[in-house]
Length: 473
Ligand SMILES: [Fe+2]
Ligand SMILES: [Fe+2]
Image 1 (tube, rainbow, N blue to C red):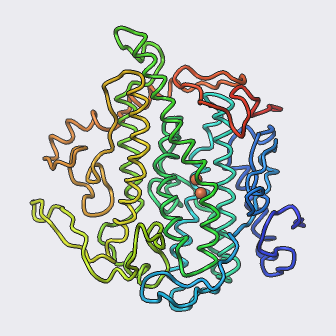
Image 2: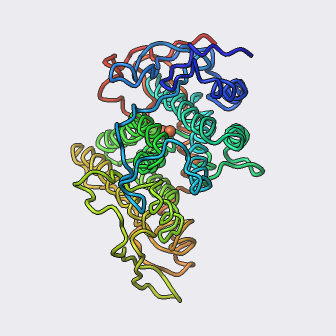
């Protein structure tokens, strides 16, 4: 199949880069097949009001218009190179950044890129059925926007594999379209990306918490001494902000609607009025926040130390002097309590080995800001209940707290007590079934399902009742 390179917006000289053209010729048709198979089901012929990045300039990265998703112009963009950029941290600090893969770190870089890249198509697969029960056209459009942009992030990372990793890079790129979220034989690499997302509250929690892990991983890679990776991830971050907006405001609107019901009904029977009770929302927060913490990896990690030492992966905003002034991280320790021989005790992790934890702390701080805004919604509605983020020890599958029994406040407890109480902390089958039962498709412009409040305003200056999706199917 001939590919028209003019149709692929890019700033990587695709028109004259034969090597990249050849790699893409083989890969692009498989990508389009994958999109048809695993992308949003049932809406491929409809016109969606989407933004497309057509250049990296301020006026080019967010072009709005109606597009059919299979015609979306997935582009390849890197933020423009910074002149004379030096590696900012680790053992190679002050050296020129690498514009080719440094041989001694090839294996590590490949692993970092593949792990990040795999999450992009995975999330599209997780969300493929949600369009059918979208609570409004506004929300449906946001879902598809997130989906096409995760598709573009896949392209951006595949470009790095194609351009800089030769044959094994091409093989890794093929694998990206072969693994499937939740498939027992060829699952996606990270656990949170194999969890099904079957209702919209889960989607909002995913974009709030799991995509936000992405923001911090991409932020750490945007500091990389491997310049093409730093530039690709930096540009991805501009799009990621909208995904996080969708998540935070989505949960916020669910909360708002629930407070309206609570304030109208003297008995506070939220379910009777088709809303989502506050305790179920809190359980979803607990579930998705704790699953997302696992994505940061172990608290004490030799991989993290190696990546930092080599200059491949920094801390979030490593070069912002308000955050860090010392970039070797050779001194000092991170103190953390965990259980050893049945006892909670204090441990010291050498700073470089604690880099996952340092990144996770920045993430938690960010999550807390969203929590504060959700609690503002509660306050404004005159409610006394408040949402919280569970302790980092709660419900963990990876790291020093994995598979141990802690309550959401971080108190260690015996397994029996934990299992008798966990139905209060995490969504039960009944909760999930209830939320699912509310999922009905609302397709009329300006109308919203009864469990969610409309947004404060529409997108890109359009009104809330704008026809964000035009159906042809
Ligand atoms: Fe992404
Ligand atoms: Fe995202």
